[in-house]
Length: 460
Image (spheres, rainbow, N blue to C red):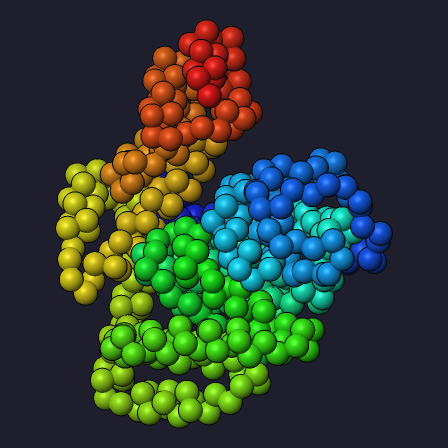
């Protein structure tokens, strides 16, 4: 299995964040349709509509949330969401209260998902932009993209190719700088337990070098869409950038509310790294809107303090150690036996104290790496490698339904229908609910005449 080591490490370098495939043409400009007459039809306000057929492409659907104060004439901003699993309604359900609070329309693609090339997802983004402008009461110059994990990369690449986008929000993913030279103002969300925390944090220096306005918001989460309390900053970001571009008047009340929240956090949080992040956030969000010189002075004093320099060095060492350990674990996938992995994962799960968060992220990394390696080995019919990788995957993340699903794929390809069905039943017990995923999986083509397989599908 040595040939897998090289493959594995290369996959590590591009970050296992369920990213989209590399495109044939990533930065092709995404044109926006001219404003067309609004469709006059009853529109449901205050509820997430799970599936709306796209008028520009009937093969596409999207989820929609119109805020309770959605007008018939005034133009509202819109955030278009890209979820890595094509669940357009999920982020809308999380953030609909914020949409009411800030007066935003929310749309979420049901077609953009992991595995598509960027030219495909750019087309999806273009269609949703055209749909928003032509069908709803949307301000053409206040369209923002937002995405999580692989969906974050979709949002970033589509925004990079479109000068009409006013802001972009990326959660739980590194920026694919190989495909991006410019971006609209970008806000990144980094969960402390997210396997991509290191990469999101390190992206700030590259954005600085490219002179791209940006802010990194840390929160106490894992590899997932951030909670609504944290994601409120995304709505502030989009609104403040509209003010900076003089798209809307400066809203002093909104600015004051934001400042009160951040000043309260500064007063209660004595961690110097957290204070550094808060000062940076205030300056990035409000620069050119209000006088931020006081916060710039406080930031300068903080960075010159011995306590900050000590904690910053410790953080840098932790990030470097984490990156090195990812590389080492990648090599261990086919060089260490299962007994070693059992002991190592037990050790990782029992780490407490200052290194606990790092090991939480590393366990998440092993889970997603295990998925990627297992999936690749199964598709290549390399069953000995697949068994090893799937066993490691289960040790790292025993509650993940993808592990027994891939195990079922392996058994089906080997011709063991009974074990394949038993593994699928395990996947259902762990939460697998996607009937279409099972029905369309090519590994199960020989199972469609099996009564037990069809009975299992009927449970969904």
